[in-house]
Length: 251
Image (cartoon, one colour):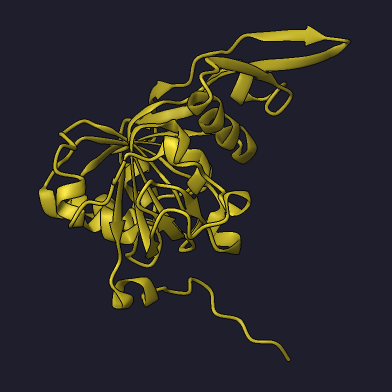
């Protein structure tokens, strides 16, 4: 039952080239930076990443992206990541952009054993009708486009069929975790982390505070340990290293 692994490198030692990774985080909040760095240091490439976005400010998944280690991204937000946009438009990166709520539910459904579900999000658009550019040819043309999806009517409303997502591995970050893998997240840093953890066949969690089993009230557990296979405890310095993407101040 003790799922604690000594180091991040040991925790991701079996991630191979071409693996699919579900990665938690939103912007720079709740991003498993230490595990991502360990994947980078192992030198694996050709990765298929499922994450809301692909890092920012040379942090998070941007580390793998800049090194050319990512082959495909399933996500919702490119944002201000100029290298992401450059690789996508140059035909170096395959990108499946989907509605944010659909991404969340596809991850949750995959983790819950639900192969597919119907949603109204995307009906009447290229999300359902197909034709979204997944890969460009580097000259402004589309080398690979999204296929059309099944649309079905329920009670007079049209819905599009979306597939649940399962990945080989998942990398997540939590505020607290015990040796059995039960996790608690801190406010908005929770974001996509529980959903990504559910979707991974092997889920690795980096925790800012490691506690003994029983220290977390069962009612406070936000992700049960059944979804987590490995846990690494961050050092105080690693836990405190939290960047701010857009600093604002009040008047």
